[in-house]
Length: 400
Ligand SMILES: [Zn+2]
Image (cartoon, rainbow, N blue to C red; front, side):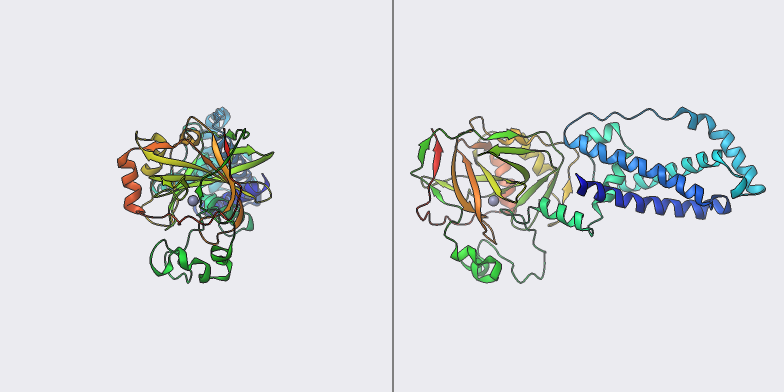
């Protein structure tokens, strides 16, 4: 994944440069040789690649094995220090060969450890798999997240926000001229006129949600869910609670593979089944390589507490529009009901810009949340459902 490569390696160079600068200041003339600078850079780049692999493995739920430390480094530590002190009192750089680099490495590692500790205190825990086996990988991966200016980072951020998707598009907390809402003057009736890009909200002929009825009963092909426990971030984007997941989860249907980007919730459910509205709904938003969207809707009714949703609520961020990275992996597959029978039709995003061409698959069997869990979402979003839209003769199919 080339995007990730560039994205993840850049900030570690920044960290390297910073740490090298620190060493130059702290170590004095001894450390000023460019050979040393190259050596330390190489060391950190190696770590950075390690961290990338770790992150990739962690997102697949694989075990990550930390390679054993190099013993020669430990054995050489003391003599190296002695040589370094001799070198400081006599001729520096030119006469300070390999052993000094080891001390330099040690000091760099120590400094990196301090930076890590500081970041650790600042929060943003990693999935336990990564934390347990490769502590060195965390801070570098986390620094990567700060690199939001590169085109790759922006593209990735867009993909993960699900910018083009069903709800995402996190709006700025203040000052947006197109601050749409679910009630009042900026409610659904006004969306289409708020911005030219939102025009389809009022002029579209294949809008969502709809009241699903009179489906054609056929042997619908099963949706193939290829979900794995995954790292996730929770975002309150001002319109819903959204869970952004790391890559690696997908569905296959109608010969296409769609990658899960995010899921989010509405209360009450936006879609209706033969006129019936449910307590809530979760929309799992997927995107294929061409940018086509497929949303799986899981209806929710009151019942038993749901551990996956509890994990999401546990990680609710305190501030809107600020992602909170969770410390454990999320088993998204556990969100799905036992029966995977579904209704399917072509529709749109249910939030501005209301873009059409979205493949909808609404699972027939609802999942359960406890009343307490529904209550938690209701405190944040008592009503965030777009009204149903005209069916306009669209074909709805349903599993037998
Ligand atoms: Zn939605």
